[in-house]
Length: 299
Ligand SMILES: NC(=O)c1ccc[n+]([C@@H]2O[C@H](COP(=O)([O-])OP(=O)(O)OC[C@H]3O[C@@H](n4cnc5c(N)ncnc54)[C@H](OP(=O)(O)O)[C@@H]3O)[C@@H](O)[C@H]2O)c1
Image (tube, rainbow, N blue to C red; front, side, top):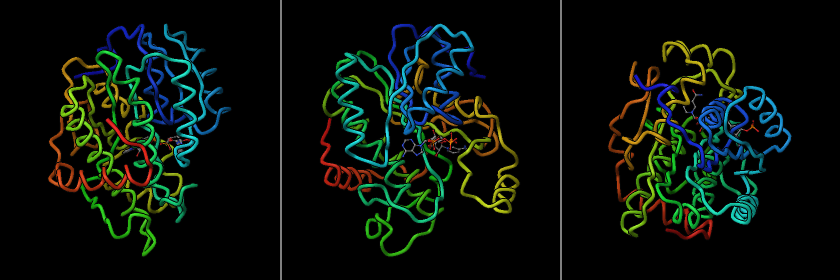
């Protein structure tokens, strides 16, 4: 059983966690801070990031913390975050693409993408590309993309990526979480082809008590909890991301997940991905789309 106690000393490492003020991201940032890392809490609200720092610092870990504004629903803001980061830091050891939104009422990012596809996937595609030069020069760097078991029912609908024809909140969430894995896998193939020494891998937290369900009504929430058989505390849901980020045995192009109850509960282990996440043709097409609409080209 792999737990927080297995995290080795991370002193000297610089880490970014997106959406670090709540839920899985908060627990991920806390564990890495406790292990000695310098953790950047990349949040869309600076005050929430600062409040989170006050809360984490009260726990006397051995790391250091920094608050930064990152709105993944705005490509300009993402570039600004990355530019500021590159001015301040020479290395980036771990990038955890964690922030996410689930089943909001139909809405768009500032750049006109459906909110879930835009924040969960497009924003993290651009962020990773904008930070790629630093990841490339940092020995042993890793990129962790946080997905969900919802990816299983995901399909990339290239004819409706902006949900202009129709909007189904759960379908769009599943699409965005599949996109996270297609991205993570395709990125590892491109890194390998470029000869860079970076690991890109996926993680999914299982079923956890967080604010992600804020857009669900009570009945739908209760039915979902019953269907998955109960929720874990977010510290446990953070373990797959942490395993992917620091475990020397973790590999690129994989999915780390809780090991029990179909991936909904348990402790981190490798979970074989289904064909929809391993489809290289769809992954390439999705990458080309993201490249074209963001203008961010990498590796
Ligand atoms: N909880 C689960 O059971 C579960 C299951 C499967 C997958 N996941 C995945 O786990 C990840 C973390 O989710 P969670 O459960 O911890 O949810 P959460 O408690 O709702 O936290 C989500 C985080 O993402 C941030 N965020 C949302 N929109 C953003 C934007 N435009 N720019 C920057 N940050 C933004 C939120 O910031 P604000 O606080 O400002 O809104 C918050 O910090 C997500 O990728 C989610 O898909 C969670």
